[in-house]
Image 1 (cartoon, rainbow, N blue to C red):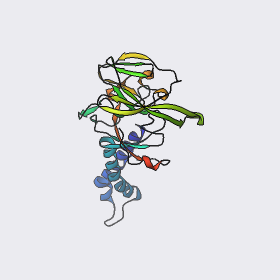
Image 2 (tube, rainbow, N blue to C red; image 1 turned 90 degrees about the vertical axis):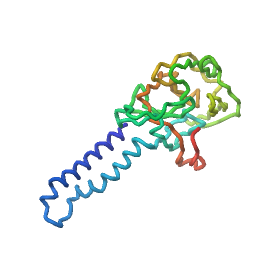
Image 3 (cartoon, helix red, strand yellow; image 1 turned 120 degrees about the vertical axis):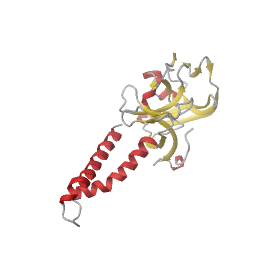
Image 4 (cartoon, one colour; image 1 turned 135 degrees about the horizontal axis):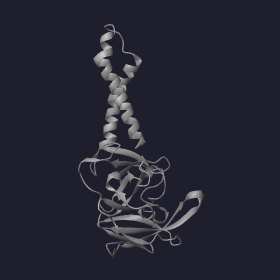
Length: 248
C-alpha cells in the first residue's frame, strides 16, 4: 500500500512538471534551448511510471513470500505474481471496487490487506465463503458440517524459526473440486473452534496449519481488503526449481 502511494506521488509530480513546462515554462525559454534537467527527467520518467503504475494497480503485481505459513504450497523466498483483476478492478489506495470481475472461490490462494493492520499484505488460502459454517477440530477441517477428505502423502521436514528442524506430515486435502497440500504437526496444539462467515467476508487459513496465524486467530477477511489471486512463482534465489510453477 505504501509503495502504491509513493508511485502516485511520483506520478503526479512528474506529470505536473511536464504539464507546467508545456503550458508556461517552455514559452519563456529561447528557441532550440535544451530542457532543464528536472523537466527532462520528468518527461522521461512519467510514461514509464504511468505504465508500471497501471500494470501493478489493475493487471498483475509481484510479491515476496516472507514466511513458511503457506508451506508446502509456497516457501519463504518465493517471488510470486498476483492477478489484480480476479476479484474486481479497484481504486488504488482506497481499494474500492469500481468494476466487478469475480469473487474469491474456495481453494484460491489470495493476497489481502491484513485486517488488524491494512498496511501489511498477507497471503493465505480461501477456506470459507460468506454464509459458510467453518469448524476446525483435532486437525480436521469441516465446511457446513462436512469433513474435508485428507490423504496422507508422507513425512515433511523443514527448518523453522530459530533454525530448528520441524517434523510434520503432508496431506492432500480436498477443498470442493480442488486438491492441495497441507502440513500438520501431530504434537502441536490445534486451534479448534466453529464460526459462521458473515456476508462480505472470507475465512482464510495457511496451508502450514500449525504454523499459521490466520482467521482462526484474527478473524475474517473483509471484501474491501482483497488484493488479488496468486497464480505464479516467477523467482526464488535459493531454489531455482520453484521458478515457473503455477500456484494451486
